[in-house]
Image (cartoon, rainbow, N blue to C red; front, side, top):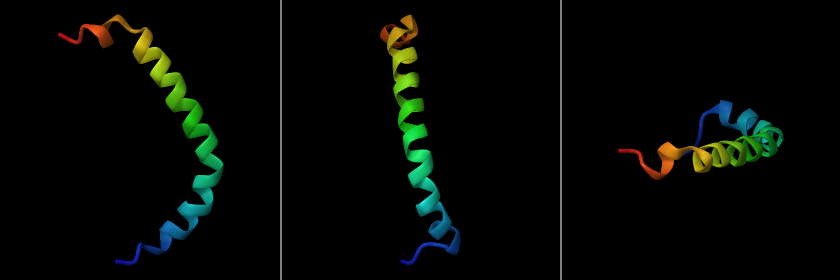
Length: 42
């Protein structure tokens, strides 16, 4: 199962967005954890 030709660009591009993605994930996690809805979704 070979990936599409776009995956090639996505691979090298992912390296650059990897750091940004990690930052966004950490930021989102902080917001979710700080959000009261996270502890009481219902």
